[in-house]
Image 1 (tube, helix red, strand yellow):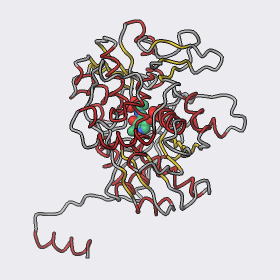
Image 2: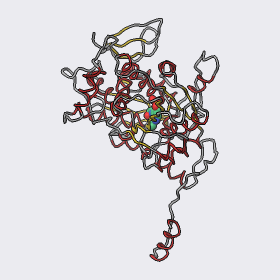
Image 3: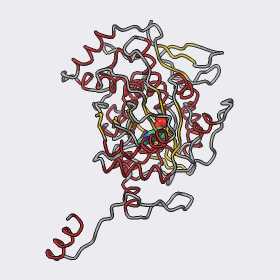
Image 4: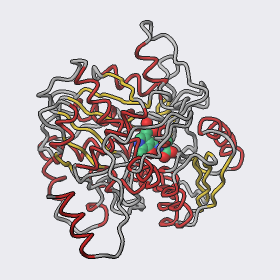
Length: 439
Ligand code: F0G
């Protein structure tokens, strides 16, 4: 049976052909999922095939997404053309200094910031853009806190599609805005927050025939699930105890959970890692849901705030999928304050790794989960860094020079600050200063 779109509402369960231009169920408005429930693969043979493809020079095999195309049932390489910038292929990095900071024996980062546009969005966007092309769409749109738009602009440009980007005015980093401009997107800065603009764009996309590439698009999720496939392939299929990931619109955790479940069901792995999602404290509706004893109602945050602008989201679209994935994996949800995120980010920098603020929520959350005894010191943990250090240099400069303030005016301490030093043009004084500071 080929891939189809399935409604996730247990009372509806409608099924639609894969080439219908829909993002949510036309009957009940619930989220859709792309997949083929009858898919079976021979784990040993498929693992070997995927490993062999790393030696290949063909674009599909070089992509860290399409290399795993047996898991992407909507794509048929004989019929379809993939839009690829050789996304994925992101490293697993050991970070002893970060582990020590969190009170762990070890921690490994899967750094999605090594992607072509510097974030994990490329793993999903290669799939979304490929489907847009196949459906004969001419224009693609997204609302974004910055990374989705940078990624969509690049993949649309590569595919010859017209990218239209909606951004919350004044609340995205210049690195990300600059990327959208450079890749030639029509860039609209709307005076509203991410959640408000997403509601608007969902209606607009339907009315104008523009293809929507937010993570409500089920094919984005399919691409992003390969982050977990690649991670396991790189670890020779040793399953970690925990996968830690920041949560904003909750597309990534939904994708990770789906990918891991599929691998488990087909016998590629014998257990599921537990998912730990970390949100920014003032943009944390998912945390609130998991920490309300009843877990009966998902309540959005109407005025989300955080300097980690990538995850400044109060009404995440993928929450029903994300709840299912966190619960299925026996996972947890944590939240981190602005100070905790800022310090964790500086520590990741001190490892020579670096990341953008939202990504550092992982280390901040891991430290808290370790302190609370939820994660053991000797647990095998993979934390996913979602974006590149250069995405938000303004934040970095302010942190290190003592000028970082929360949107509500609270100063952030530069606990790991590293100020640049101004010196006169005098070799003697400079040598003296270096000796004083470095011994
Ligand atoms: N980290 C980074 C760097 C992000 O850009 C995002 C989301 C997240 C984490 C959260 O991931 O939404 O799947 O839970 N950025 C989106 C954007 C919303 O528009 O670029 P999520």
